[in-house]
Image 1: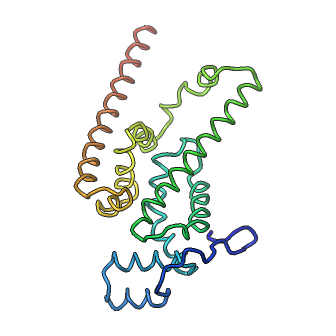
Image 2: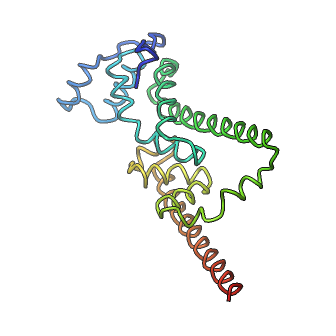
Image 3: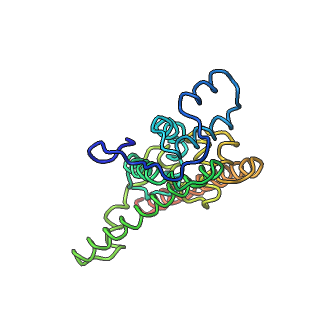
Length: 233
């Protein structure tokens, strides 16, 4: 949702740029083909920055997909993606007026998403340590309760997602935006502030790294199974 609690308005009118087109003008531009995709997107961003609620809603709908990919790349495994998207959408509404240039919008929104995921991770860590102190147990004790049989019960897609989260950030983000959300190299480059050629190279390298991780995991599991079978013989 793009409204505050009780349906109140979130976005104020600060940071209004000059000569901002209205939502109706933007729609007319799209239909007539007067401006290209990037110019139209910049106009939509500027309109949202000025407090146009229709532009704000449409802008979030257009960018929500890649924001989800950023969150997947940075969130704790147990964190709920929809909850984090709600958190980011609220920050998006409240603070978009702080963005002074449409070109800076995607890098700004990317950092909002990263900060939300990291904040959730810190909260989860504090909660975990609090419970451990309460029951007087160590982290290794808790992990021992939850680890046996966990990998074997995961579906292949979830296992690949887990492996992808182990990649370095610079490879993890573009790979998830490309493979999970189907974004183009240009869209990813704009979000990360990098050239398309760099994005293409990182995605190719990220895929190789992911295949290597998956192969290593399979070999490790096969070794463990063979070892267990030998000990049980």
